[in-house]
Length: 313
Ligand code: NDP
Image (tube, rainbow, N blue to C red; front, side, top):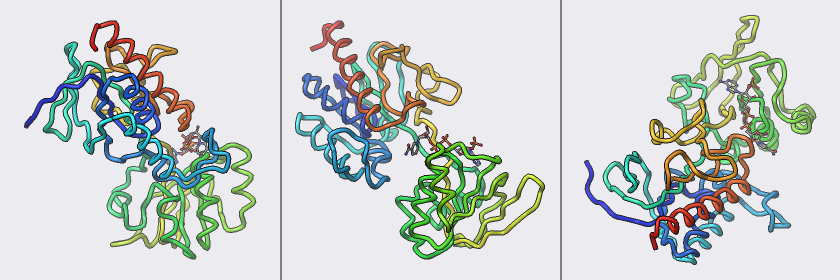
């Protein structure tokens, strides 16, 4: 049910470091960018605490504050920032169509995709049922609610290791559920986990069920020998990686088997002229705020050149 149509020169989908950086460059180049922020305005950095590795902040900064700064800078040059989620696209013609919230159609000369990535889940019914009632994919956001309590975290990458040590500072006990006999996390992160007295790592273990009716009361774990164990916990954290938010582009844009958008190496160009991809939606290797910002800049410059070549002013 499409209601309205509006034409823009440059449409930016997503509002993380990639989207805002694209907006800053596009606005300064007079491309009059319109940005739709998506489900999580500010992106993944809004659910982190301190950021210490973004250049220019020698004392570090807080993720949500940093994204407010990005936004203010994009607005300063005239970016039209709006609430709304891109729900479908039609890249058949030279004029690219993007539908927002299933009702508003935007036609755009150029589109910059900066839709980022989202947390993965185990896929258990109990996980879905108790999501927000003890089940969380963000220890930094929700750890505080479990102060002094016993919790579990699933995963064995750097995120899980980092979040386990974060939780260990707040909680009485942290079970770390690792599906293999070793962790994927960097040696230094593993070292921190192993040297934290109140973290117990359960190797070769998977979660059969998260227990509890209205809130989390436990987790049923099974190891590779088939032995079951019930953990008595009130919080269950999932830290098993992310997947790119690119579902709406399936069938239109080239992507790899895990959904990361393909770009011409060294550029932000997708297989559709005038459609550019930036940030975590196309980067499964680096996934850093600063690399996302850099690729957002590339996308805006590529879009600017594309419009100039087409004679669109
Ligand atoms: P990763 O993809 O690196 O790790 C995911 C982990 O989850 C793996 O250990 C994997 O197990 C496990 N896993 C996946 N699916 C399941 C499942 N269904 N059940 C149980 N376990 C599962 O994701 P991260 O989010 O940890 O990290 C992403 C990237 O960000 C990495 O490159 C990482 O280095 C980086 N990063 C860096 C940080 C830093 O430097 N401070 C902090 C956080 C992230 P298995 O190992 O068996 O595949």
